[in-house]
Length: 454
Image 1 (cartoon, rainbow, N blue to C red):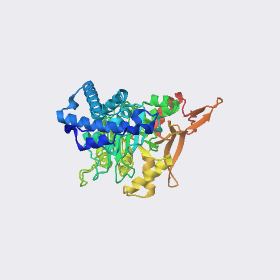
Image 2 (cartoon, helix red, strand yellow):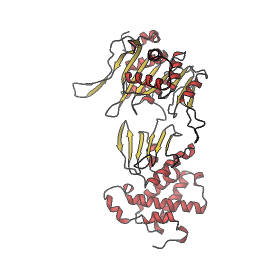
Image 3 (cartoon, rainbow, N blue to C red):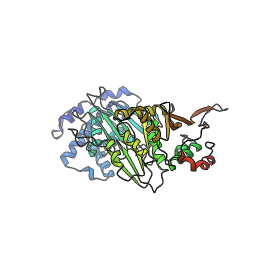
Image 4 (cartoon, one colour):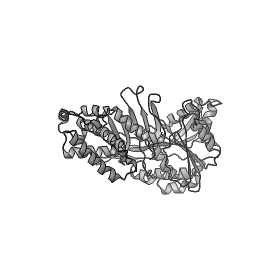
């Protein structure tokens, strides 16, 4: 086939040579957009379209969406006819639709990013895409043409954020404009090709009532959580990855009175507190020489000078634990944070370990006393095998005894099988009375909610 002289760019030529009509036979019965032929045609059409846009010196970024769609449809038709691409009209429309997403959006990721049910997008190389919905991972049929295509889309996402992803900087973590988070690792660090993880967050965070309706906890726990926040108890939310810690923290913040000033401190800003007076702080990585870095510890220390009523640390995982404990012990009651741990006891051990790594000056016993004095409740949240998130337990920190931080479990999640054979969640109270004086004025409130018999 003779190539028109004005369209003989080497990349376009290479893309065209990859189109093999016989490839369509490798996926008989599969939708066209899931075949290798579709991706080969799409890659060639994309190169063709970029050449056309450059030759005509067009600025399609300033066009209305319907104008872009009409232009792409016309150019795709011309491309298919001129190069005798072996696809029918229906297949051509699918290529045209994908091209619009390539030019104005994020290609194969567009639909997943817009899907409100998608929580996580996990990409292990260009052909391997997994999505989490309702806490359950499943493989998606979408894919990229090749790793170069995947990198182009990721770099397009990162470009407005001022972040780089290349050989000199093969790993990046960035906050997306919509509040989500992107982490990407490329070769040589990732052996199987580009590895991309995108965590999405709801535009409107779950409220406590919505979490209760979804079975995360019951009415009695709802009342205890509300009383704990209103009573200015210091709360640690403990759990594993993707267990719902951030969602629960967002929900708890809605109980904070609107007259209070809240400072949030995060490594990557993820919290979206439903509160009228919030100051959001986010740490900053250093430059190539390491200069200009601002750590979470720096931000927590600075937040103490910003007249906060409460300090919310998105996740305690480093030296900032010392400043957090100090804040909880010096007039900033009602502060909250999350921590990665599999149980309340593990959370306490992790606090001790982090404080030790941060250079705590004092004995082991004095550190434990400081932790016991700072933290009032540890809320353990877990993701069940079916993807549901539930509060696994609520534990009160009561003090120090025999050189150990002492605790008492207030509620524990159980699964009961009813007479109909179905499973039901329940959170029986274990009969203990809260030690903290902060809940003294909420005794009747908790009784009325059917909570602990105080």
